[in-house]
Amino acid sequence: MLPKQLLPLVGDKTMLQATAARLDDFADKTDHCIVVCNEAHRFLAAQQLQAIDVKAQFILEPAGRNTAPAVALAALAAIQGGESPILLIMAADHVIKDSKAFHAAIGEGAKAAAEGKLVTFGVVPTGPETGYGYIQAKVTSAAAAPIEAFVEKPDLGTATQYV
Image 1 (cartoon, helix red, strand yellow):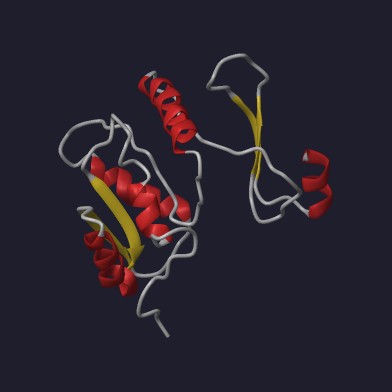
Image 2 (cartoon, one colour):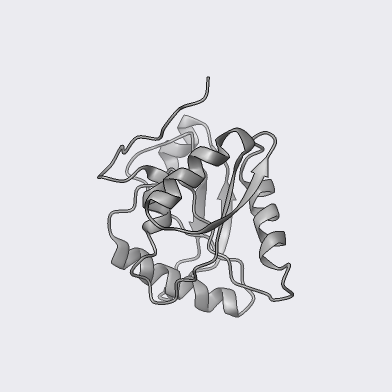
């Protein structure tokens, strides 16, 4: 059974609304938002974004296929006009409380992306977690550090070693 509405879990916005609004105060924000969601959720997602006055283009998946195919579809849609935009991919299940730090990280990431680099954002884990991937970055004084390794969803022993 599909949900009839999304509920605010953290604050006064749903997680989808919070994700869309996360860039409201970001100077380099664009008004072009692409949302990839399941076909069954399109009206619910559109209603949520309309409620906070966010316009979006929707790409509908017949079934959820994880992040990579969704990002590929959004990237193809973004380049249809012949441009080569820098994309910021944001999942709607993250809670980011420090928007200033987030915006600073986006700015640094955009600089690296403009140089042709693929950029990923990570957080320092507070405990071992088997449901997330782990990034090993090269130790450097630069704001954007090269990635040396990525381990997708390690077992508990490996995650514990990383932390």
